Image (cartoon, rainbow, N blue to C red; front, side):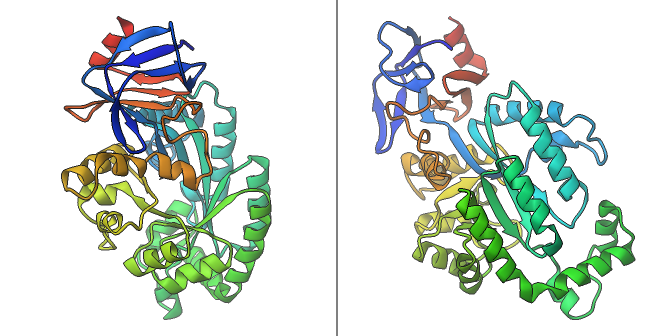
Length: 379
């Protein structure tokens, strides 16, 4: 690690851009008098992106079905993609579900073991386990895995096709799901019906598990809240983070109760939800969003910021805080998210004209560097 003085760039402070040098000392922001200087005129220096939820790592672990021989090599590739997109802290959202394949409990354990064993990763990768709430028989094993791998963040999902099951109909895509899970269509349907049958027992079971996880300091959230009543139910169970609420009503209920709201950055980039749900940009404009996450596309956080600014939804500093300072606050990571003295030197160096990333640093270490920015550092 080398102490540096980055000079000539515009540095993003909490209230906007400011001129002046930025020092890196022993991996933190600080006074680096006498350190090597790098001329970054024409660039912005920004806090590193803190990605609250991303599952884009899956394509690196299994580019084709069944191609999952060495998860460690895949994680090295994930690290490179994260860094190239300015992400310095990444929450990898891994399923623990009845859906099978890469969403199965067995794969979740493989993933956790690989992440804990893979060395040399520069990006800080945290785990979010997405637990299917109706798997009542899995609660003990799931809680043990959270403890064994020190998982900091758990989100409860419910992907069961309750509408079809309640009417006694076969759910859509049943055969495809069954094949992915390694079950016959008949066995898969029987499982779904059994899980649907325990619905009334789920809130109490979730509340008990959530209380135990909260005692251990685990962050807890719900996924795809579709109404104020749904958000109220999960809040009552101890799930304080509302991840990707589907309606304005649910987001407003979360915000009114002080629950952090996380939305997908691709929603902003696309100009709306791909499935007809609430617009993330409109929610940002209404002050309802506490963080924009990559969801399924790691370039999206940076792209979303540029789109929000271009569309006049908010100023750059406010938009960038949605992918840096505010997500760090949601996760309780007080050592990053802004460029204040003493914070970790997690930085994104952005070309002011093109909006492209020239370099990413994590704790003062280079995780990505290319083009003209690389030439300046090498010079």
